Image (spheres, rainbow, N blue to C red):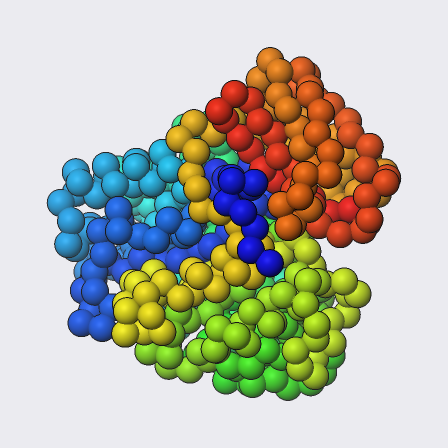
Length: 434
């Protein structure tokens, strides 16, 4: 069912609302004949988290990070980042990529990595970083998930912790942190724990309280184990469902148990079209069936059965490589990945409100059974509405306090939208009734 745009002006205004759906896309800082360079102001508005690819080590180093836009004057690029912020979107600088090795071989290199990344963030006004280290950048020789022993990995953890602390001290808000590891580095830990296999697990574990979105690359992978012991091939609904549930539920490895992340910090990472990856492209119909099953809004699409009845309604969203490939008209039609995301997540409107409701608004508990408490509302008098996912308003009332409690015991179990309006400003947050 298509939700009328006027009923739900959904805002993508940042990670303070941990339940807001995210469409993450990587923006390529180079020109490709099949996926051309885009100006930032040409990005489809449905992409609300944008990873700039990539910050890379300066020539002759593995630690001194640099970034310069290749097709846009620096001043124009900075203004475009600011315009994306004004429209309510996050812009991150992604570290590494497939062709850049980042390796911190001493404390001096660790400190320069941290300083150079903070300088890039400050220059362009980025909201934080995405960790997309591949190949030899992350590997392990021993230790456990909770107690790694490899010095370069320990320095990387320390550097990111330090960057996040410095960012928050400077800006007064937490640094946004996302990660896009390949499957071998995460779910591959079920097969082995050494080299690249499971190598991201200590990094994820150490930074789990800082991670906004973990978006494992469910492509260029081959087959992988699910937590049910089955083996699933990339490019299928079973692969998507099994690999996403693995990072939510966690799994045992020879380096100890990996404790999963909450669904609201996990996104489904897939290529925008067949040409965007070496393997793992999945047809949009199959993607929709898999993600809707994960969300608990659709039937089981394959042989893999979710271990949690009802699925994961708080699943954060979707990620793709890349925005440029999605924009290419010869690649499934322009912006087909963004359109599929919109269909999956309830045809949420992409309307952007110029002046979003201020404050860091939260709902607790979430999920909830009898009552929810709304905190952080910053308006003298606001109207609050609860809507179902079809856009139907179930209940509305007025509130005049920064903290208020609403009874929800009469609601049927499921996912709902809480919409808060103050004048022309609006904030909408998903919550779950159990």
